[in-house]
Image (cartoon, rainbow, N blue to C red; front, side, top):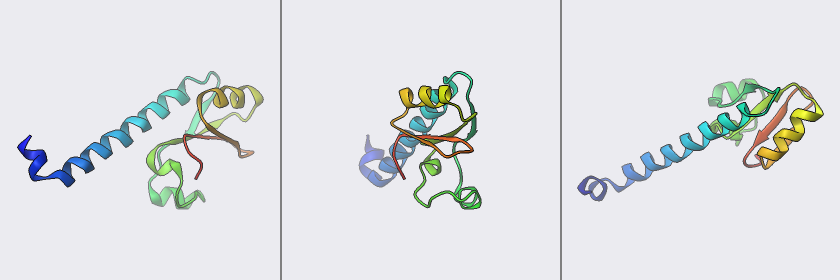
Length: 100
């Protein structure tokens, strides 16, 4: 307890990291549960995100978005049952917990 009192910012940073990582792992697990879908993109570092043309505030930067293939009505319908944000991008289905 003294450690938290002495370094409150460190505690907040570690706690925030744990929350972000936990949600990212849950996202990947949920995407894997969609029958017939393959995850083609999940967490991206800023350089990879720029390389693929991702938005600067992309949910992929936190691991809170996934891209799925194949692009078909069944995978899209299943994704809509699991994720609040689903966008058919033509080449993949983007699923996330917030809209970038």
